[in-house]
Image 1: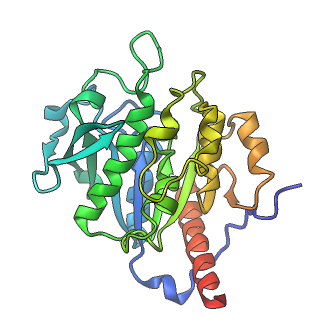
Image 2: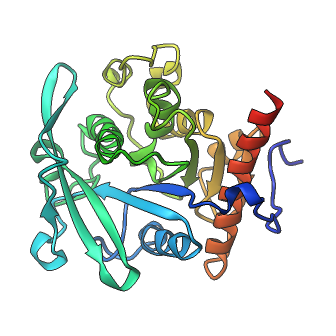
Length: 295
């Protein structure tokens, strides 16, 4: 039996109220051509373009990993967006914003950069496939860096779509830490889950590091054991919709999704997922509008 919120209805029609330019913020762990092609990197590249071609307005963010060739990909710093410091564990970390264009897609990609967190020549694991010890802080810095940059852009997203566990703190921050900010007060969050499990836990004090105004220790109680399963559960709990980004995901996560009352989109064929995702976005937003009418 599927959970009450589980849906596979892809015939959803846009209501008139959504015909205005909906704003969608994509927060991605991987995007090609900046990283090698993978299931997630290809979605990170093609989905925003497809959604933009559906008439929605988009912004796209990813980390500026040190393995990304800035000259080849023509990254350049956006001075007006850079210069802020983010405090994590009582230490200031400068936030640098860079941007590049994918000309064939007529879209820009914003990069979150910081010398301490993202200048190493690898992504989330070192050359021997060891999990970076400071990945907990890198997740926090990336999530907060994206949201602070969006604030500087004064761009209010109707919907935020997160891809990969590096974005796992975004749903929590949107629903708790940034919930009073007019730019994010009405934002809905979708979390895509991929076959990207990690086997080592984040550091035990991550619960304290993620705390900002609006976020309490009770909100992050799951992170008493800060492993992949609980990090993903946390993202699911604070999201409005869940998408299966891979045909197979962690079995415990799969079972957890079936126990909760969330709107869920099953895995979609690569040939048709853009249309399905676009319809799912409209469904999430329409549910929000219906809820506002009832209130």
